[in-house]
Image (cartoon, rainbow, N blue to C red):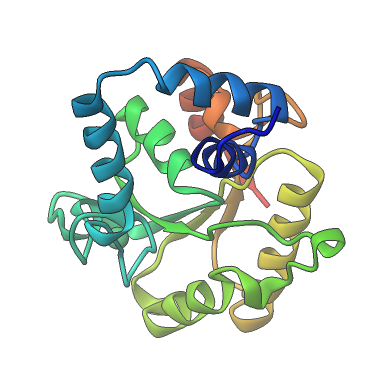
Length: 202
Ligand SMILES: [Zn+2]
């Protein structure tokens, strides 16, 4: 049997998503055939607006509906601390804890030689110039990349680059209590808060 083109197209779109295999892609597509047209239209317009209605903050590279983002624009935040994370989801996870009041820098990835992702492919040059430009105002850089092989490699690279430019810069690494190999976004609030509180010089 030949699958209608419209169905095949959607299956292929789902298959491109992370963690979705061919079976799940088919199941989702056939499920959507039973959903009322009105709901499908809403879904479609959410997809369409996803990128059109969001921007990346030009200071910290967080995703928000305005630039600068809500965190950078908040005068109550401590601008002397920058917490470096891999993904916007990590910011959301850390913000749930409510204990951290500094700023962030979202790399949108990690150094991964096997995938041909070097420092230039993620927001590392922007981080370095951000720190160099306001060196005297920065008290601490927290490296909160994931406790995975690539996350550790990214943290080590950043430490080396930053210390080369300013040997006195205080650099810390979170991690204590975080399960090795796991992503920050999956850690629970308490574990994350503990890892943040227990950060040590790096
Ligand atoms: Zn921002």
